[in-house]
Image 1 (cartoon, one colour):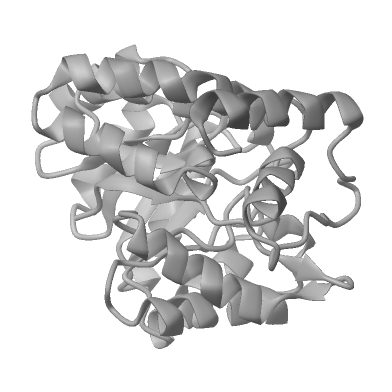
Image 2 (cartoon, rainbow, N blue to C red):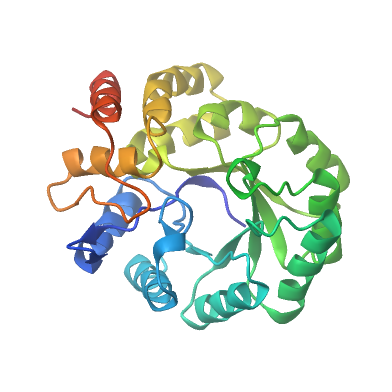
Length: 293
């Protein structure tokens, strides 16, 4: 259902507020440069600092601006099950094609709790869900047996996984255990190539915010089986992947985008702060090496 180079979109701010005009231009630029789907209101979109009203408005604008050209996978996760359900209901009502639902953070549910949380959502939402496992941020790991149990119990709802666990063997475990179609999406740019080789369908990417065409070219080479070209593009992108996390994300990616587009501001919301001087230096060097500056 979902594959390719998929940017986890930033949420642009200006003077502290959502910059809708800049966001619409960003959506267009991403689609024009080969992105195959869009994810608003994920981690890179600073979802935790958006009010519910803002969160829903960003999703609505993304769906409206994409206008059916590519799927929109709306960030709908929460550590409050009822809040996640409200996000899912809203995303469905405005025409999103799917939802990205992160493991509940801070609460630290057990695997049984995760199954109960996601099953509750699946039983009440008609929107296809991509599970999102990023234990480095959530402290909660959606174990392979849990992913497999959910995908097999609700095959029409749980259609994929964004995996940022760092464990590439899981792609094989998921592939062996899940009975039907299931999109495995990389959640960690530096291992995009390796994850694809293990059975991945693409990447929900931070770097694609900044280099959408190169990321789309990487995915195209992988799909064509041209691994020599894919490795060359991967090597070219690698310094940029690293630079995007040279400070608390998404501060580096917002700084990079502000260098590419004068209509984008690099501001982030507290408790995040703008990229440090060292981070900016790393981003500048990486952009130069990739040919973006």
